[in-house]
Length: 174
Image (cartoon, rainbow, N blue to C red; front, side, top):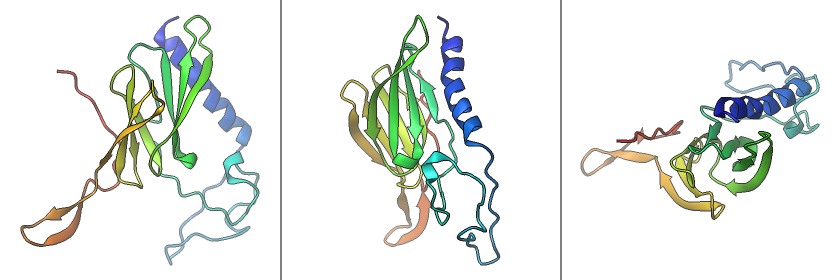
């Protein structure tokens, strides 16, 4: 099976789930900078992850690259942002069917996942200002790269962010 065909099948499942969840209106910010709480925020049925609590406000960071296919085309990684996990699936090369392989806990709000090799992938965690390096064969994080550092102006930390809320990572093969 060709990679593009497998990729199309992998994208079909989230599309169907979103279609079943139905429309959810966006809330607008008030002059105070806050969002309304309670029925004024949302009165229609909501996505499963939000439950039935009308005071729930979902502050997930927007995804940048939430799905990635391994270089050999045998694995799919997906950001599970609400749970702070990366879900890893094996791909049947004959049928294109996905089989859940592992769920790896990473930082807060994973927004991008990229394969560095067939066994190593990196998850970019926007809110926890980090990148989690995952070994697929172990099914766990093997390293965490902290991206937020205060700018050093000599002897005093100025407080300006450097690497605050990372959004993506790209590998360049030389």
